[in-house]
Length: 80
Length: 80
DNA sequence: TAACAAGTGGGTTAAAAAGCCTACAATATT
DNA sequence: AATATTGTAGGCTTTTTAACCCACTTGTTA
Image (cartoon, rainbow over all chains, first blue to last red; front, side):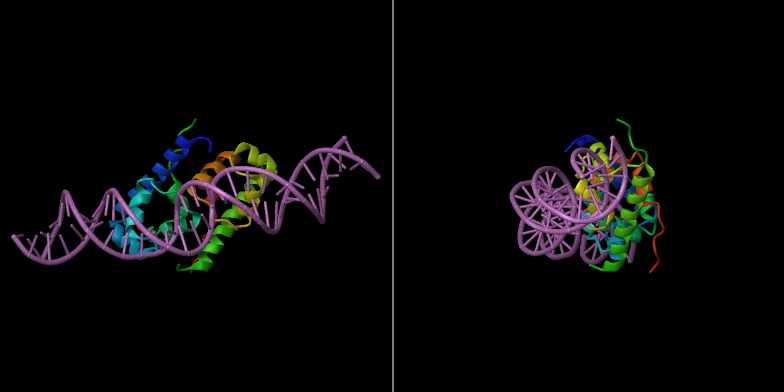
């Protein structure tokens, strides 16, 4: 496993993006959870960058938020 | 697990995108594998949509391909 | 103040990815 | 023709998510 810190940063930025979009849409964890097949307590962990979610979960999340999955990755990647 | 087919389509489209970019850059599985921390045989499976990779793997893949992770999701999501 | 909603953290079990390697067939290269 | 490259498939072990559930705490609001 190379570049552990960069991956951790990536997870954190992804979670932040999810958090931003969720708040824009005025959704609580529980409300969002109703719209996608993810447990509300797990969404909390995702936003904190605590779990390395898989592609289908990314898909579910985007669906629940009503955005294209691509949008969840719309953030700057820190170089080096 | 709701919507199994949609998730499978999503995986397939993602893999197709990876495949397209890899070929644009004239990279073989083994060459790409040298630039990211993923085994070459696993990249093959990713492109075929056979594995549900996690976020750090998405990050690695994008890094190896020299693109922003967002680009790997730049495809149409089939409705319904 | 009571009831409710929200965020958080901890735990469980089964399934699957990560990470690794080997082998083989089909191409391409020399 | 011989060699090297490429895609593919299979197996293996360890680690971790997925998918749940429950309990506690802090805010909200009726």
